Length: 411
Image 1 (cartoon, rainbow, N blue to C red):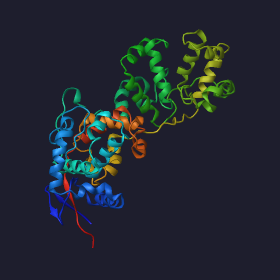
Image 2: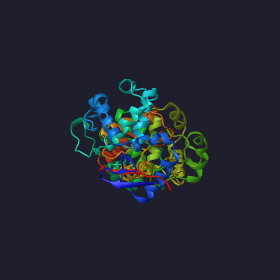
Image 3: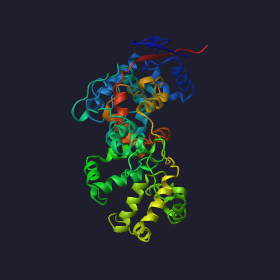
Image 4: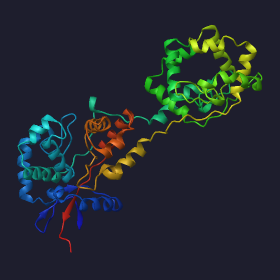
């Protein structure tokens, strides 16, 4: 049985427990079951007594304090706080460095001459300390949380609504619908306006002010809006245009719904815009040899008919997954690392109050595979730079809480 005792050490049956983390009953119950069923050797730091911890302090002062701080609170960029960290986690990480699994030469050299008993005592010492608490970051260490990608995209897209309509569904003839387009096509179009490949001075002046990050966020926002045809007239004969559209289906898809990310869907597009684009390809204003070859034989009536046909088709949402918000990501992290990053398992690291730069560094390492963990690789694979910054800032800003795991004999 494991009992938790807050904010002090207790000697019970000759054992002293290491500082762990306060958690809620449901989370603690789930994680404590893992603690009791794992490798018992992992939990040796839990059994350290006062003498072991004193010896651990002596070893830590000589081998660890230079990087991790005298009290386990790091002042070195990218180096983690160890004070109040989960005991079995520290022990297992020290063993990983000692065996070379982690591949960090500085840490390898620091621990390579320590025997297993010394690693247990060092882990117990750091876990016995009061954890670091959030401190305002400044200068290059400061990470300001950013809006989630979808919210950022909506904000950036506000400048488009006057011409392209709310949610990208236009009510202005000649202005294209922005819904139903793959994000890759949207970003490419913005870049074409920026570099002048698409000739439109108004759009160029607006596009140059859009950062690459905002272009991606806007593209995502419009791609995730419910698609609907442009709310504009469609002069021309749609039935006649349907027959002509057979030549377009190979690239733009049946009924104008493209299956290729870089090729635009035409379904539901404003008819006047489609017609203007075809005329631009025909006269060379838009430079695309394939489109020029297809548009050149079309007279103005055929162009209007083709545009009318596509305007009457129902656009479809591209296959784009809605990204998780920072709140949704933190909830996923908390399933293992505890509420607000306060782990209730001696084997799983606490994130609360950890250095922001260290958390960013570790998440990058898991995402790239430089640091190995099947669970963390699965979790971090879809993280964007924005997600990583926000998660690091969130957990670094949480108050670290300590409790004691006191191991008592089972009945």
